Image 1 (tube, rainbow, N blue to C red):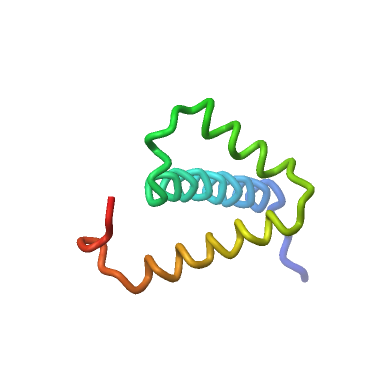
Image 2: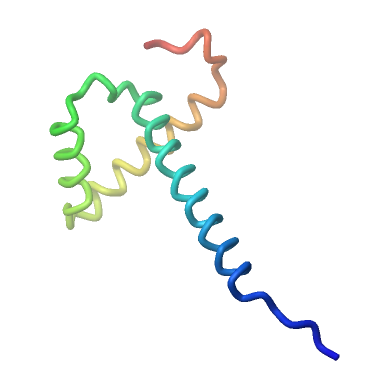
Length: 86
C-alpha cells in the first residue's frame, strides 16, 4: 500500500522555506548597503539610484556597473575586515 502524502504539511513547509529565503534575501541586501558604504544615503536617494539602475536600458552601463561590483567583492575577499577603509 502507498503511503498517503500530507499535502498540508508539505505546503506549510514550502511556505516556511519561502519565508526564510525572503528574510535572508532582505538581510543580505541590508548587509550589502552597509558594506558598500551606502548607509549614509537617505532612503529616497538609495531607492532612486536602484530604480534608475533597474530602468537603464544601456547594456554598456550595466556591464560597467557589474564589473565594478565584481571588483568590489574580489577586493573585499582579499583584505581582512579590520584593514578595510570605511
